[in-house]
Image (spheres, rainbow, N blue to C red):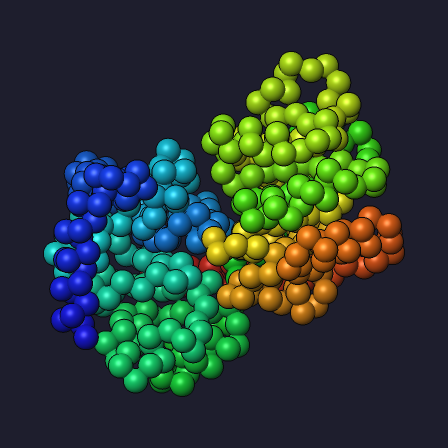
Length: 415
């Protein structure tokens, strides 16, 4: 199987180069990797002490960030390398100062793995959540480089736990230690005789708890809100909009709505605005008006402010769950101790599964159930408060995952 895997990686590489000519995202994926080795050679010297973090995309980046930032503070003389697999992570963070070097991870071939690790020569490697690349892991193990996985979660359906997954099980032993999110993951690893595992929880809780320590004020949102009950709809897709737009248009409740769509391309934004019959305004046109409180709907056609916007919410709806695109981050609004509503498709998102069971996240599957749940939240203050308190307690009780990981890493670096 390992032999077949390597053939498939090379075949995939060939076809990706062809498809990239016709697909923008794949074009970034392919072309962004062309200069990785030149970048590493130019920015890392043979005498640098290097710590390498690898994440798939933005979600995993957010999970690894509390640990990365803490290590940067504790070890300022080390050089930090951050790699992404996906353009949706790299393209957003490529100019960030969170690491000394930020690049794509070259495809998982034996040649790329040897060349990359030779140039980076890390003394510590941290893979986040789902990243398991057999050739990179084999080379790291061969060179006896300390490698760990954090915020990892395992499911029985993964190849490691299948009868044909021996070659991938072997890859796991490149990790000196795996910090998992839950007991199920620990039990699954133990079932295949991997025992260097600790239940630390999810470092994203530490990340969102940090949000509470920041200044989340936005004067224009405060003006728009005008002390009225506000529903914030974050990272919405067309399937979500089909649910809530009709509610906004017919609702007689005395409340305001802030919509932050996932897709902020102007044609889609204008289509959304046109579908709303109540007075609405775009973020990009707010400077034209002296009184934002006159509007009922505020559409956020920019990126980077959603977490601050959530701080003004009395109720939040998180998008992605009505379609197949994947549920977005429910912890960001939940940390503010407010009720969170999501769509019907949330399987595989542990925090959403947990909170649906606990009653802090409310799942809807139609316009009717959305209307019913939101109406109850708007009219029953005690119920709204109790639902929000569940989220507050859940997020706060799951913090401090980073401290367990940092304690372990500090011992490695001190060696």
